[in-house]
Image 1: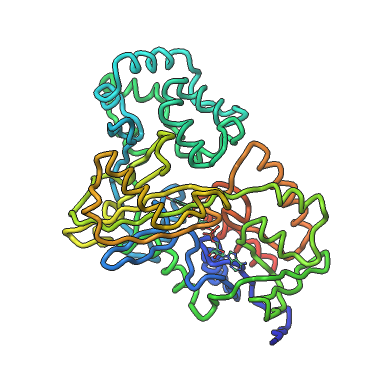
Image 2: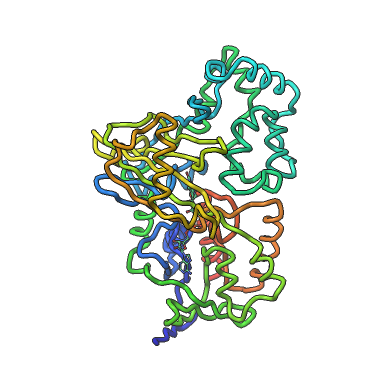
Amino acid sequence: MTTETVDPRTMPITILGGGPAGLAMGLYARRRGLGVRLLEAGQEVGGNARTLELPPFRYDTGAHRFHDKNAAVTADVKALLGDDLRRVDAPSQICWQGRRIDFPPAPFDLMRKLPPSVLARIAWEQLAIPGQSSDADHFREMALQSYGPTLAELFLLNYTEKLWGADAETLSPQVAGGRLEGLDLRTFLLEALGRSTAKARHLDGSFYYPRSGYGQIAAATADAIGREHIRTGARITRIAHDGRRVTRVTVNDAEPIDVDTVVSTLPLTVLLRLLDPAPPDAVRALGASMRFRNLRLVVLGLDRPRLTPNASLYFPERSVPFTRLYEPKNRSPDMAPDDQTVVVLERPCQPGDAAWTQPDAALRKAACAMLEAQGLVHRDEVVAVAHHAMPFAYPILDVAAESKAQRIKAYLEGFDNLHLLGRSARFAYTHVHSLYADAKALAQQVALQAV
Ligand SMILES: Cc1cc2nc3c(=O)[nH]c(=O)nc-3n(C[C@H](O)[C@H](O)[C@H](O)COP(=O)(O)OP(=O)(O)OC[C@H]3O[C@@H](n4cnc5c(N)ncnc54)[C@H](O)[C@@H]3O)c2cc1C
């Protein structure tokens, strides 16, 4: 066993976890002249936002896009990737009862694809709704108030319950994750009466994406930090403290390292489990009641130039076990050869349930059967397969999660030198651009404290 002991005044910031949050922290801390030491359990950085290879194909760990919602962060990422960060215009579609409906919904498209009786019901319900609801207690209430029962039942409640594995009445309105912001049916109906649909198209179809896959953002960030400051294969197995400060972290059960400022991007529940001494019983009980949703991916290389022109296909129907399919080539042509394409299907599951533990071959069989039933792919077209399992894909934001997370964070704020950053670390449904913004603000705060 080796022990690394360093003068605390010259110690680098210790960053736990090398996903987008940890990398962004490393980047902005280095830019402020601070030393960093990033410890990542996996063999690669990038966390849940990586690009993997199935030669000759490339695909991401789930359908990712870079949202242009923070001009300063977009500029920073553009500076890292140069011309490799490209704007993509690829709308998505919903697969519903064998039909493909534009997402976000567009009036003329709905008129062509929904039965007149259903359309009439939707239109009638729009007259009674007050607009997008901001004060709903749970997701079901928000969906019903915002879109009316017919539209909510057809496309939103079923999809949401499948994705999160919970009844919509138990889920926070925040699980919409901004995806439905501005998705106001009344606006669409007004636009249908002669005005442009540009706003609607923009909601889902326009975003940035790197030439070699989403993971290029993580790779470029790691290069900018300096790879010599990043250790992979370094799993944190113990976080020792004296009640006021974190004093040491242990890597791989073998290597205690003295620390000064610590930024944890580890899932909040993992951090609680690693603390030594353990947190008070009440805090541990809160942690034990918080759950994460896992995701399994089925990746299929196809012997055809393209499956669809869409960024993603969504499957809201409860009878379909998968939630989404995405075709990397529609985000960047470099993700597959000209004459072939690759698709990735997402299957949300709960740790320990049959979907999480079922063999890869069984999951793949279900994926192929579903694609055939939808008339999308014939199994003879499949030329390559891969599978990927992602624990901690989404923090499950039930209606009590926010207050539980607040109480846990209040306890952790008692440690002077510990900061939480990241989606699972803060138990919040945040996206990569906001993690970069949060990291930038935290680096500034730490730099000010250091002078
Ligand atoms: C299917 C899917 C689609 C998504 N699409 C988008 C999108 O389109 N746009 C967008 O902006 N965001 C998207 N996201 C969200 C985005 O991927 C996450 O916000 C982001 O990955 C969170 O980064 P993070 O660093 O907080 O956590 P993570 O990415 O989870 O990284 C945490 C890191 O900590 C490491 N770690 C865990 N335990 C330990 C330990 N004990 N010791 C050391 N290291 C450890 C892990 O190995 C991992 O590398 C999507 C997420 C999913 C799952």
